[in-house]
Length: 526
Image (cartoon, rainbow, N blue to C red; front, side):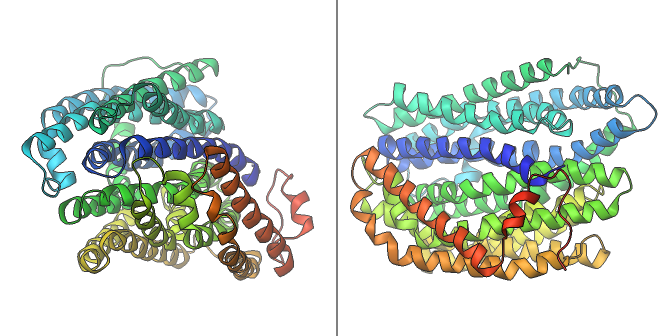
């Protein structure tokens, strides 16, 4: 498989989704601003987001895809039928669990909202009741997105990566339509309509995956639940993977809880919007790489090809550094013009912009770590080891909690993002050294040669952006067109400088452009 080509396909659709997400967040900032209404919606939205990352996109995919691939790759001649029988068995257990869980969460929406928000800081009883109502509107999304994950995992295993990657676009389009068509002068009404839109988007995503499966000749029958050996193994792998795959999301929940409990209204919104900007490269690179690497490595290991799996992970790490280092530097250096252009109008004032940019810089320090987690964990999951990542995730969460408690008072809204970045970096270090110790990962000569050169190229780009960003500042508070063109000019300038710097430092060569078109990974540099 051409790793760069597969990443480009998934990454392109993820980029489209993230750009639409920024449009959505810009409209949200305009119509709702930074206050109780925005914080209440973002708390309600945090639960389905957390569950999607912990279970749907993280744990379920990490456990299901290697097992499904093993079934499909068995040499007994059954192949796909065996895999689909296993998928139907998984659905027979998953569906009733999701239905019961949805009902239970709807009933317990009050304590769940209290747990996520800490009761907010200085709200009335009516305001808190409003926040609980928003949570009840978003809870059905959890079950819907979990079913989406099952269907998407099947398509990913069969190499149809783009279908699942396109599904989140429907979430953003739905919420954009709700903002444009159903906004109100009252921010509370706009926030309520956004919460309803979340669950509507879940139904649309499920319909999209269902019809895509049918178009690819994949149909699933509803069976009576059977607790057989395969299902037991799946459940055994899922629960530890949930914490391992969702460490960053859990860290964000902790940050949100402390911010809503101890900081002024609007702080949850600053952290959320900063994370949304930080999520743009994370979604484009990290989730794309994780989506491609897990089925690829599990297929290679299933065929007994350890050398190919090692090569794939080296090239995945190289791609991650190539794309992540400049993104991290750019977000740290240019957070102010970016936040101004995207959010700085309507109810979102200059103070809100400055605080969002500060939180973004803190998040972005850990951006390489967030993405490297996605690159390294497939090395465990493909070998059916979900316990090691969860142990390290728990340590990471403990570090995050301590960091939040220590930093939230002196650094306010900057403290939680900085603690999250530090915790993620420690998580990556533990994952990396464990893979190396077990002999499952060795940095090859090519990566050793290129990694420091990529870092040097990113720093050179950052220096140019630092001195040049003042040129676009007069335009970031202007019309939509001027804002868009100014951001496009900033991104284009940074990309051009980085491209030149990678060639100048020898991190990238003209020969690589031809090698990217090959189906097999290029040979190791001497």
